[in-house]
Image (cartoon, rainbow, N blue to C red; front, side):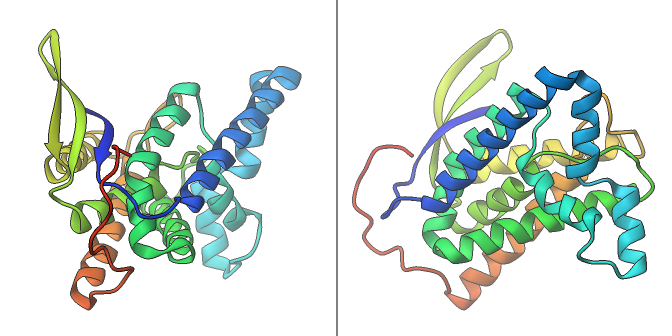
Length: 241
């Protein structure tokens, strides 16, 4: 099941979401430049410097060094991606689901939420494999936080998705609860199925996805309980976002 867009219009331009998408593509363009000039070895060194290396993050936390390069890498890693498929897939999810969460939280609130979600996701992966030397890169964890908030705030929103039925596929509008619930179950199955496995060579940091999603769900529940966030009364009808 691959989501394409949602029928959940926003009331204002999602400026922060657009900025994050642009920033990720700009960072990916920089990666392509690094690869073009120095090859794969240069890109690997770039990832080690600006990605989140679990062993270095663990050492920094143990030493109480919260502002060093290791912790800076936790933030900058959210803008780096390992391939075209990686960045395009992440940006699709960010655009579909991030704009509505931004609409609910407000621009400043969403920016802080996205940053906190990415940090929580990276730390979840670090906690699972604290001695790994493989750099974590990608916006997936922060985006997973947006997915977690979305499933709580807009469970009935209709998501136009490609649903595969064996060798065939069909375009269907599916409730967000099913689309994102299915995605999360896949992360749980994949994460525990690959428990302890190395995340290099194209591997996926599933526990970063899980940690980010859980953090987003918690924030979404708090917003519902406290009735916080911007008022969603009477959104004007619009095209799918």
